[in-house]
Length: 446
Image (tube, rainbow, N blue to C red):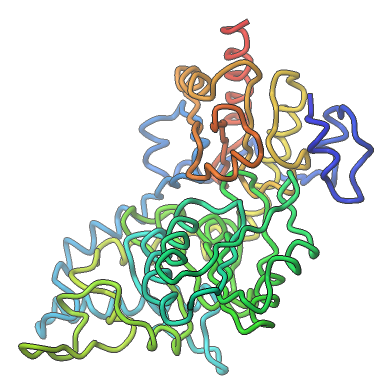
């Protein structure tokens, strides 16, 4: 059964409101990709250790291929030294390894100069996306926000791109303004025009919703912000693992993502910012290695990006992040990632709409879900759904997904829902196990 309100909020190409069957919801340009054959799972040690598991929680954290685990081990075995702090060969080698990954990431996200050379000094290493966004809200926002100004965000934001702006607005006497999409996640031009205006100094948005799975029109938000002299901050945690990202094409002034969602280690994040903005910002943390010189009463900061990298970085994790992104982009390829994930989402939703007790949250159309399908089983608490699926060897997420304002606005009961998130290393067997598990859930409670 499909929620008729969701249908009514679809674009003009949607069918008339009413109950849709599986063919209505899942027949749009079927992505004909072989999802029965899976050449990827063998590269992931966890699946070797747990061959029967169906891991459908990649939006929370991805699995790591063996090459990433080996890279982290290789760093500790062959160049374990503190980068930037030694003149001996091990430290120099570690320093050069980190610099190489910094340039690799700059190239990956399109942070390049006119000659196509990566602007590596615009890439700051952090612990995660949350820390990256907090740096922007704590260090950049005070340089531009004044009383009466506005910060615009969407109601779809993860708490990591919401709470920092609450704090920044409270400190500056500014107003936090929300953009509301349709119930299926579409931000209309009218909403953008109404909410982003002369008082808007900062617009902060996710590129892909971690609940609705929809892609946000970042380019339109950037144009609106820049037209009024504002700045755009992009949370790319759910996009970099799944699609090419170009900071200049997006019109971003800052962009953040985490390694662990893109096949890399936990504890490594990336903040990209335009160099002139990073140079104008004060540091977020102070201490070792982020200084140029220190006296008893004063200090001079190191150049960007070291200015924002106080203390010892996770050098082995950064090195392994380079291996993860190389595997993702050069060995698998974004074309393959997108093709497989689209086919998997299509197949999963075509099966889910056949279950009358499953309520899909967001669009009924598979091509608006970038790897993420949120849903509820009628009459069953999401935690119970997740627990019973776990007994069947199926891993999904259940809860508020760090998006309580969104679930409140959507009217989701108990402020909780289930989420299945697919990655290129999943296959038809995983989806079938998931559907079988949902049938077990319903039988258990009925």
